[in-house]
Image 1: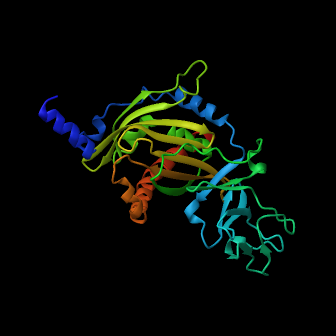
Image 2: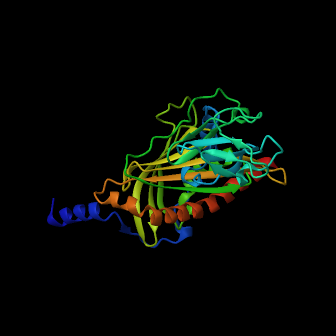
Image 3: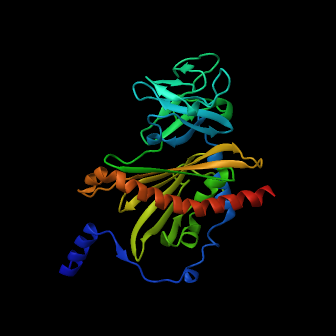
Length: 335
């Protein structure tokens, strides 16, 4: 290896960025030939057939602190709070006495206190006909098991995708759209739209492999392998990423080669319920779990309060566009 090549190899290890050439948006290589609807539809059908154990993620773990948090999952109003030992507790969002909104209540010594008449709900047993739901906190996301909504055989815990080893940075973003969970998942099963629909974030995208259209698809082959460069202005970071759908409401993007290898982006599509217009609402809850083998990456954990908002901003920008994609898909197929 020449001295110049040695210096370049060393520089690449220190600085992962490269200067990107200016390519007009309309002069990119078209991807519509490769983005076959049958490939996307059949990958979606396989994902829809996988079990969930009736578990739904509904919030970031960090969002549930000193005050109760209320939301709706599958048309069911729930409330979440922390018990005396910091454990996650989830139950129906309506007080069993006269129907007060428990999310407006107070947490006292691990019990949820109704703001109307002071009824205390411990969250560990049935009280006044009010029964808590099974809950799980994986350190990044909060989950609830709703058997009446899922309608499947329940499991003791949700299926959590493999995450990178510590130390890592994580940030969770939540947005809602007028569509169904399948529309969110279908969006992520179409990696070919990335550089066209999100030119501010992606360039030089090439789908290296996709699941076959015909025949039985093995678990190993049921993935999309994508070479893509993440754009930061005129700079880019090339990686190879893998997209898989471990469940009907989850897509996982994992970096398998390049900067940040083993980092994951978990995209969860949680049904909220019908809106005032009767159309379905779905929450996109996306967790970015970033890792790097670089020696100084661990120091970034201390700056997490500053870095996490930037990560959430980037995810929010992408999903504002992708929700438009998902909502359009819902509109077209529901006409």
